[in-house]
Length: 349
Image 1 (cartoon, rainbow, N blue to C red):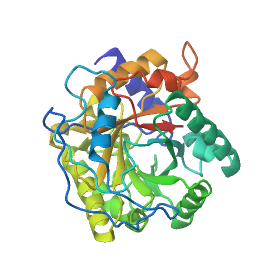
Image 2 (tube, rainbow, N blue to C red; image 1 turned 90 degrees about the vertical axis):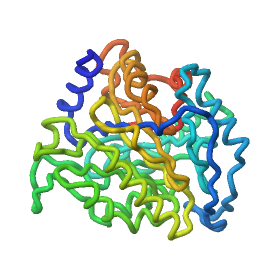
Image 3 (cartoon, rainbow, N blue to C red; image 1 turned 90 degrees about the horizontal axis):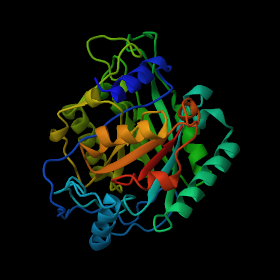
Image 4 (cartoon, rainbow, N blue to C red; image 1 turned 60 degrees about the vertical axis):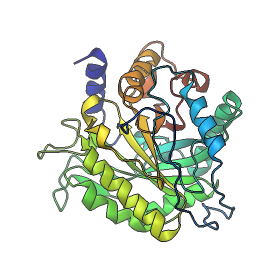
């Protein structure tokens, strides 16, 4: 086990089971930069969450932006080859998504639950302005990333070791997002349940054009292990179930593509990544979710995100945990824009 793995493993087990989301994504087979045109179309009237026209993507601009995100990488891994063009209305990569993460029931789970809505938006708007100043070519799409199913240390009535948020709470998250015309991610920590059981529970929300999905391998437990005792995992087959589920919703409801965030901070959080399938209805983000000092975080990104590309990448900043070790500072947008590839999804906890 590398020193990075040891550090992050300690992190994953020491923090409260609901405090952090760590996950991974993976690559598609192939390395060329050519993309496949999709013949499917999204409803030209689909909006999220306010009314605005949805237009087909400019494939030349899309290709150019993908190349820019490689940031001069020469490994041949980026951009991912043979990926499909997205349907009309795609957010990525023309915009960078910047979100606050958490759950309203706990101040310890992230900024989303720590601050009252108006204060939260004041802080998130300030982060968005920093990103747009650092990268004027890429406008920011603001959002909130809400943990809708929270892994638990107690079994609950069904023995799944999860707390499922009531619809009233999820509705509150959507109402907070509406304050700033933001998008919403609903995140699932399945505990001893399965993604096949938990994902359909939020189907009605995913039918909304501005609601997207996050899943967390850290809390996908196998073999009856209680969440927080060990870092969990997802196989490509489980991940493909999610993308197929989302793609079906997009097709049947004439929606713009869904953004799908998979957290990762260790190698074993995802298995058989080379079998993950990309779809024109889903934009796939592998999100680096480990905490620590800047050099450690950059190393984690190189080892577990850059090395196994899927489609797009993300990066998390922990307002508190990232300050625990020297040099006791947060990474800046300018620093993150030096990564190869550049992350297009940024999460603050």
